[in-house]
Length: 88
Image (cartoon, rainbow, N blue to C red; front, top):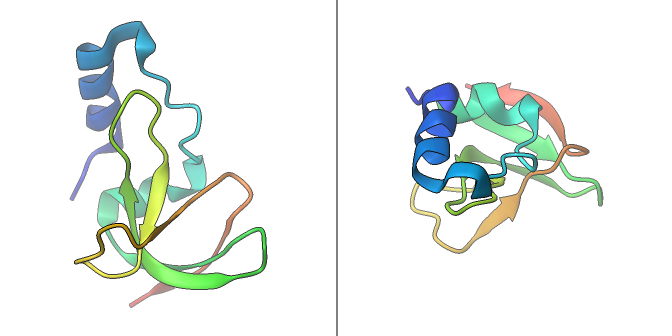
């Protein structure tokens, strides 16, 4: 299980004032931590399923990774995107 607060503290320590977590939509934090698959409806109406990951760098954003092996095939998650359900 991942810990969001530890991630934030670690990034603040390494990047200092440059670190900006403002694009991390709070509704996805629990699913980043527990790594459960979710179904998300994006603002454009598209629906996808996957696990929540996070980008690296000074201004991270949550990602929806469609498979555990996803590399480059992910969708950015924003404040307006809706969680439809948790997949067992």
